[in-house]
Image 1 (tube, helix red, strand yellow):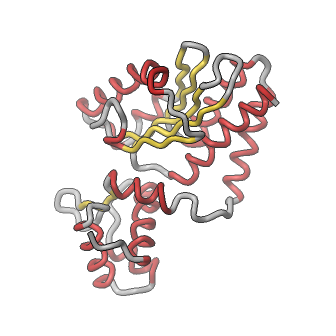
Image 2: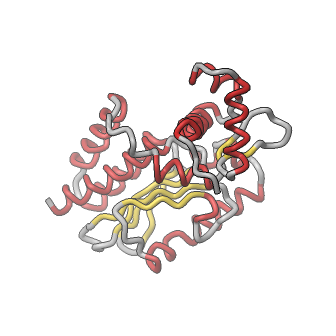
Length: 239
């Protein structure tokens, strides 16, 4: 396969980020304005990205959306490329820290962290507390435009029903793990992304906190916050 060019990487990144923001396919005219080139140039690059499987054209729309492969490439190669943390992101991290530090018992600290993730990411939040999975934000999840079809809702429900035993059995060992779309071990057709951070707690050396949302989401922001939540909880509970 022909390697993706630097300009194609930037265009893919823009498609991922614009689609997360507007929830509709991203067209060449918008990208032409962003990159200050002609629409024809953008269309030619989009054709190459589509051939490589990074983006797709839904139905008869003139715009494109990222595929699971496109999101994976973005997460692996771009989500951490900008080391500058925006002011809103810093404020979000500070708000999360204050909610965790202000709570009482360990269980309440974890619950507060989950509830804050829900507020900040607009995804479903979850964490393991002992042998239980605490979840919050179901309305956020099922309020997303992706989940208006009953069949897809059933896939999401199946994923949620099996998430706690899967976490216990699989025990992901990375500080931050990202499962995009069909990478998920269950609910593969749900169109969801699971982002989880492992941390030590009084309940287990392998406790988890994270979010579940549509594949269309702001990966930089959500990954940063989930990672911060895990680090903050471990520091507060074991510092």
